[in-house]
Amino acid sequence: MSASTPLAPDWLVPPADANALAADVWPPSADRDDHGALRVGGISVLELRDTFGTPLYILDEDEVRARAGRVLGAFRTAAERHGTQARIYYAGKALLSTEVARWVTEEGLALDVCTGGELAVALAAGVDPARLGFHGNNKSVAELELAVEVGIGSIVLDSSIEIERLSAIAERRGIRQPVLLRVNSGVHAETHDFLATAHEDQKFGFTLEDAVAAVARIRELPGLQFFGLHCHIGSQIFGTAGFRESASRLLELHGVLAEGGDIPVLNLGGGFGIAYTSVDDPTPIEELADGIVDVVAAECAVRGIPLPNLAFEPGRAIVGRAGVTLYEVGTVKPVEIGEGAERVYVSVDGGMSDNARPALYGAQFSARVASRTSDAQPALVRVVGRHCESGDIVVDADYLPGDVAPGDLLAVPATGAYCFSLASNYNYVPRPPVVALRGGVARVIVRGESIEDLLARDAGLHRVPVLSERQRDEATEGAG
Ligand code: PLP
Image (cartoon, rainbow, N blue to C red):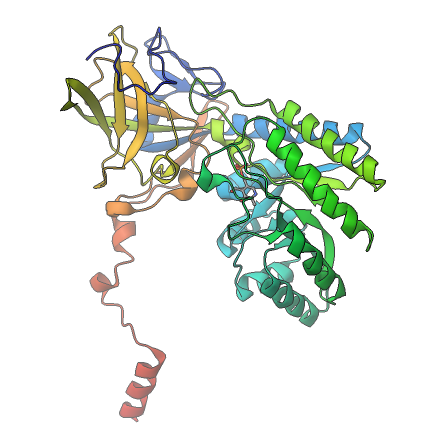
């Protein structure tokens, strides 16, 4: 294996030390013990492997709580400077369990859910429904009914059909449901195309033009109470430019709509980027908060309208860096790929079933050998999973010690967001447990699946009688 290779992407430079843990990418509590084994939250990965096995989602609870507090503090401070308030909804889609819901709400955050399933987790966690926001472009009638029944704080409306549907549901219950209207500001976030959700040609929300009529309709319906506009421009965004441009476009609309009545809230979504590799340089959350809130305040002042309360919905920025996925190396295979080039494939015991992001978006991650350090020269490798799919890549390119071998533990940092939540059972691979670390203690917060769990759903095995209603009626008639 060679130290430098033309197969390395331009941005990736050979590290001076292939054991080093890049600042900002790993949880702040990550270090190595005296024997070189990686520790997170003071606990060695060897101990975690022995207790919980691999693959394993490791989540540093202190880091989740600290990030939640820091994000809330940043936006509150920025809002207070302008005499208004900020509410932070943790975007549960990033990673949700009852424990995570409790942590973030204990830290003072509200919670954003986008399906009946996420709503059920939040309610099971005992989250006050008034602190929940409900998103989604195709919420079912049953989901809307449940949300209204439990007294959900706000529902973000996404289509004209949903406006009528929700009003009818709320009216039947004799209430006026607080709602926001999701709009596309048309701002193209500087991110992977699939992640940018404020393009005009996409399924979410209303264009700025169509929003005027939609809000007028909301205001005339008896079951709805218009609280404000909502916009989410995309994910993994660095810098304030996209958010600032989007906010100023939104405020133009907000200003027009304010002529028709008070608008208490403006929700500017989430999307704040984190570092996945050592070259990522995310904007500090305080800088983002100041930059965005300053624009909102300036736009309101220009238009002579009162500054609304502000809301934001970060997911990744809260849980992303708190997560580390632990794998065991199964094989190491140098592959001759022509013109003298050789790529080293390191296969681990998980893959796209526990981290779909590289396959879905071409997302970049990094890796380190976690069970030991090594003085071997760094070698460029591609870390791949165990699935029957050539796109089953965990880390497209990184340098590991050249003696990486079967049995080594490999850790991939920054996997707290959109890994557990996007996990699948592809190839009948059970999903790993999630283990939370706090105060030197590791505990399972979502248990791992077993093969038995997977087989339990197979109706062919259990001879579950599957009758349609028609078949059942015919059988009953026949018996009579
Ligand atoms: N809000 C909405 C409406 C979203 O669609 C998303 C992510 O897709 C988020 C918030 C959270 O985004 P992020 O985790 O990048 O902060």
